[in-house]
Image (cartoon, rainbow, N blue to C red):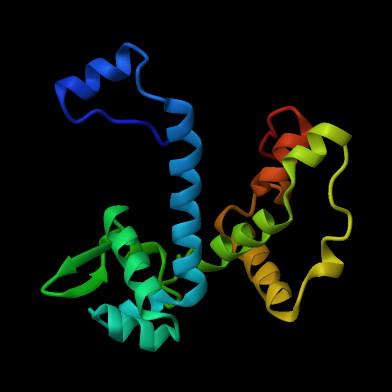
Length: 184
């Protein structure tokens, strides 16, 4: 599966097949914004707040201890991405979020997503491609919350697929190895 520009009208379909749609922009900007939106919502506790039931933007901001204006924008973005639903002036979890994004659910991806967020903070693909080396001080730059997220994320990844080696899940490993990793 991959993110892709999906035409919804005949005109959009024609623009896509004739090469008029800037798909590289869609492939990078849209994917990055979606990932950071889900990571931010996970980090501030939006999914956990809504697990208890539908909330207004104000109630969600109060529960998450976040800025009301910014929280409302985040909640609306999550609705656009189909992670939340907006019903009767309240935001509620969409099925995908209830299944994967709440801390209490047995298959919760929260720890894994926070680990990916941590990975992204330290990845510098441009440095690797230019110099052939990566940031070596990763562990010395971690604060206690980062260590907790790292340990929980590693545990979550191993629990999901205990037969696959840890590096299978690391985006940085994929570019460093320069060859597709194989499952053990």
